[in-house]
Image (cartoon, rainbow, N blue to C red):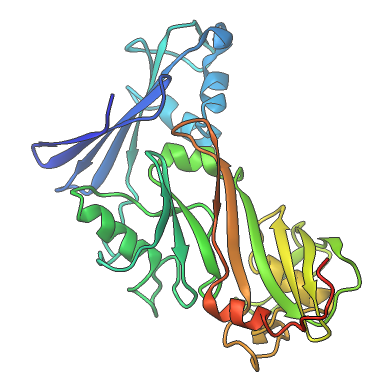
Amino acid sequence: MPGRNAPIAGAFLFVICYTDRLYAIIIFNVVERRLSVNYKFIVKEKEDHTRLNIFLRQSGVSAAQIKKLKFQPDGILVNGEKKNADYYVKAGDRVEINTTDESMDSTVIVQTGPLDIVYQDDCCMVVNKPYDMPCHPSFNHPTDTIANYFMGYWQERGQVKICRVINRLDRNTSGLVMIALDAHSAEKLKGTVEKNYTAIAKGRFEKSHGVIDRPIAREQESIITRCVREDGQRAVTEYWVKKAGDNFTLCDIRMHTGRTHQIRVHFSYIGHPLEGDDLYGGSMENINRHALHCSGLTFVSPATGETVTVASPLPQDMALLATKIQSDDTIL
């Protein structure tokens, strides 16, 4: 069933076809600013005689969503009839969930602006974010964010969508940002996206490859700064040195956890703060923001079930700084 738009009284109707197993009907009530979503799943042969709650969890519906839906009259239906969570589904059953998203934020200013889309399907979008652009509006920065431009992009196409960022980047981190196009896709993608970064750090690393496994916590008496502290949350950062010089080192990085400022804190902790990161001991002499770029995302698309890899080259400021690494240095 192809996607289509059709106007109805006081609302827009948008049908998304994910796969032969799942499609969704989304209705946005313009007057009440409420987003209603109906998801339909078809039970496969291999899923025959599976408990309903387990089937839904395997389909990407969170435990919190299931708990909420259980108390709604038509929250969870099997072949049009309400069923308890301990019901066993059969191959060919049509399982429906009906959700209402009350989180439409009328305070987000809708703007038409630059949105560098590098990948898009029926479930998600990946954009290339420049540095000095926040992902979400704030009190001091209510406009010119990814969320503002995202909502403007969809408004131009006669649709209303919530900006559900899967991998939020700091304002001055550039690179790839994934946005789920609906709540179900957000649940499916959460915690499953492989995130790869490129950074330029101070000095020469002793090893060409390393894993930093140190807990991170909020710095006492600070709402912004983080630090390595034993009572913090576990944080794991893996790095590979690509080019080393006495002054700078170019690294590829993979985050195995997703703590705030994780790469910046870990690199500062091992004595190699990022260039331009004055918050964690880096020098602003060669670049006016921390030299960190989200260069790759790998994920399984909820729309197709296929593995997708999206890449982004270094932006101009980091590429220029990388050329300052001496040409006779070893490329590892």
